[in-house]
Image 1 (spheres, rainbow, N blue to C red):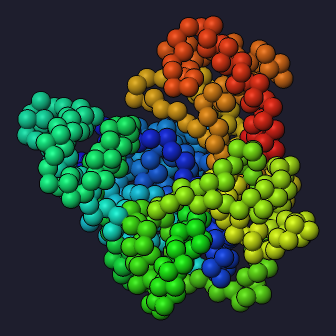
Image 2 (image 1 turned 90 degrees about the horizontal axis):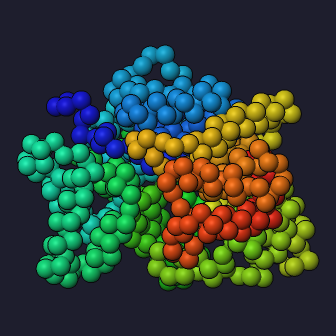
Image 3 (image 1 turned 180 degrees about the vertical axis):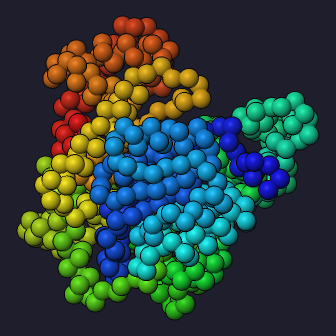
Length: 522
């Protein structure tokens, strides 16, 4: 290595994102849909965990024991704080891939997760990671891998290379400019370039919109997503070549919408795909159909195939629960090429049946809706769509009462820590809203915006006196120098903010709180 960070951005912390594809509770439904038996996940590892939210949520909300590493010391320290708060025992460390992956005291793993990191590290580190997976993933174990891919990135790559080239100018290095300042200068440079109407922009007109999107993104996100030295986009066939040599087979997509061909392809495209027998060529062709930029996949080492009876039984017995109030679930979905309008005659009865916010098996849902002429296959497809759009979640197998009580205590402790953080005035290096809390029911994270978290904190102090919540929330918002926004307009005065908080608090208590209580988040 020529420097200690090996070309990876370390002076800007990564965003506080939660990534549900790394929740092992999502494996059984996805695997069963593709005719595979998902393994029980007792040990798991995330390589390059960022701020560690996903690892910590999944460690606190399940019986799975988690390990992991991240190169950034500030991120690793925060992840360790979360692990200590929940008492999950997650073993999370600040170390390079070279050090962590060569430890001789790690267990073998049922599940290994890499979110995005494969696309952001050097070839040497990718080989270290591949060797680790080869040695440490158990027979039957699952790999979650998300990565930038082709052909979707092909037009953007020259612009990305130009931006990075600008950040690496010698003048920037001599002045010691931090990464954020270099990114800002590079974006300004590209903006001026596009104003000259270069032929590149004429040949790729949608790159103007892409640049506008970059300008609107948090610089902490851009730094890691685009500005690592070794950024690359790898076609599925190349990924398959490397991981098949490590004894892994592609199992299925981790992004649930990708299971539904009806939602992604025209009839002509589906017919074309049906004629492709080679599984690698099939996946590559799918990527061309949707101009894929980012894949989220599950790979398995020696997957156990289900016969059709076993497959249907596994699907039928899968439980799901709503994560969104039924009237807030949109029935128009934007996919890659067009909008999809979901059939109200199918989705409205299903949403109504799930509106008690209790777990329902898919077979029970189908039975309860038989009078609406809905069958199990339609219910399964609808569940996949709702999960894929973030409005529902599959549930893990129900543990015994004592184990669930332990999980519930851990998630409650983790959530209490996160609620206190939402109320704190933080240094710039730790700024960033965490918009999820942990659910012992789903085994993972649930979307809860910061203002909603402040209402939950106020509820702990004021009980169910909803009219007292706004003042409690406002004192934290004001102390942080922040204001609410209504209809795109920032509210400056205290009275305006309190009035808006009062409106939001009543709505939250009436609509969102019952759902969060059912999910045992509140």
